Amino acid sequence: MSRFLFLLLALGVLAGPGYAQAPAAKPDAPTVAPAKPKKLSRRERKELARRAELESAQQQTRPLSEKDREMSESYFVEGVKYVLLEDYNKALERLLKAYALNPTNAAINYKIAETNLLSGNLKDATNFGLMAVKLAPKNAYYYLLLAQIYTSQKQYDQAAQVYTSLIRDVPESNYYLFNLADLYMAQGKLNEALATFEQAEKQFGPLDEVSFKKQQIYLKQNNLDKALKEGESLIAANPDEVRYVLAQAEMYATNNRLPDAIRVAEQALRQYPDNPQARMILADVYRIQGNTAESEKQIKLAFQSPSLDINEKVRILVDYIKQLPNPKLNATALELADITTKTHPKEAKAFSVAGDIQVLTDRKKQARTTYLQAIRLDNSKFQLWQQVVLIDAELNDIDSLQRHTDRALELFPNQAPLWYYNGVALILNKQPARGVKALEYGRKLATDNPELLAQIDTQLGDAYHELKDHGKSDAAYEAALTFDANNAQALNNYSYFLSLRREKLDKAREMAGRLVKQFPDNATYLDTYAWVLFQLKDYTGARQNLEKALVTSTDATIIEHYGDVLFQLGEKDKALAEWQRAKKIGGASPLIDRKIKDQKLYE
Image (cartoon, rainbow, N blue to C red):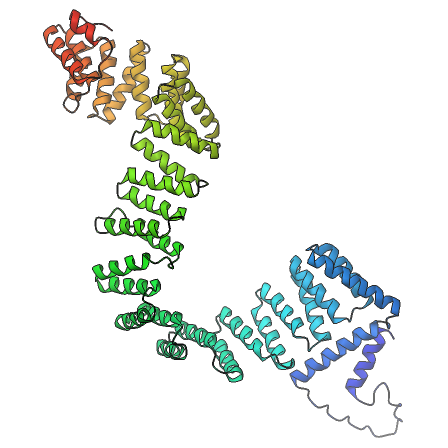
């Protein structure tokens, strides 16, 4: 029978006797008005439509032969196998072949829906899921899959309708009320969720988890009294469950019922004296009340407990870090960090956060030791190595800087900052050739970091000067100054080295003068400018700048330079006195002894 013919028959059934089936009326026969059809309810219309669709599908499918049935089952089994292997394309290929042979098989429709859901084809998943439910309206698993498909599309109303149908139409399905209530909660439909939980309680009796969720709903509805009442019921029904006591204390604290929060938290401690969560609640409450001493006491006791999760401790310490340095918090933060490392001696993150606190409270040597302990536990964190290297540089600990950068580069060879600091350490340790290699390699890696590139170029200028490769030295300084025309180190060293070479002295004077203008009280920069002027034979200008530098400095080089200037100005006795003072302080040039002995200027 064709589909068109079947639909006509179906319409005939709906219309009742007459019309297509009745014999033609005689011309003279009186017309009898048809009886007014009974109006169907919405539910009856849906049920009738469902039956018509199923009958239609069954009419389209010829009865399965034994061979077709076996082939359909074979394709189905293969399809399920490929689903398990997560090869969804092959799975759908087999399952759709099974469906072509047997489209009204509920299990096939279900499996196709599931496979489409897993592969992300939600439209087809919906269509086949709906058909599976229609073909097997008593199978709870089919409803659950359909609800999951709707939820994946954020079609929560449809998912809720599926759960409602499941609970209504499938026997022994009342426990899915919990799923429906959770779905309502996820949608923010709190009244519906509450009504559904209460319906579940009528079916299954009071349940702790239901009471807890009802409590959360009351809180969201700002119905604190009901939430607290539900909490008290939970505690009464479960006197040994400390989590309910803690939740109640937290609820009191959150809602500024501080005396009640203290009372319930202390109740928890009477049951479980070492409970760190109760201590943390008390610490927060006492802090809010302004009782700093008691708050710090409670938080320290909480931190001494290994059962307080390390991640929670780190989170709290990070909150301290955001407020440091702070004279009122430094000591407490340091003590909590120390307690954390002692309580969790095998946790790298404990030492890492402790090192951060020590840096911020100006305990850099201690911080370096702490970071190194973190590295011993987990050497895979570049940030830890970076912190160690930065501290080495700040402390001017060149040997440690070289040692630590060597080790770090074994793990992180593509980190340009490590190559930079390694090159600096090598140059300062009188290994300029190796330093240049490190810096040049770092330069290749720093192309996307112009600021670091300028720092590397500045150091390359120093290193190539040491190697007497003045062309490359000058080029490196020029590159650094192209990025930042006011780079103090590049301006100072470039101009000073030009003065020593007596080359490009006008350029050197311009750079050194610009530097002194920016930093008029910096003794080193004043000395550089003076020495450039000295080479230009501007001894008076050199004297003025050196005398200004000596107001704040007792550096032997500056004192020696001052003696050289005095000598050129004819004040030889004063020059000798300055040379002798420079020698006594230590750190003057190798020529100082000849100058003193011969009372003559050597350059």
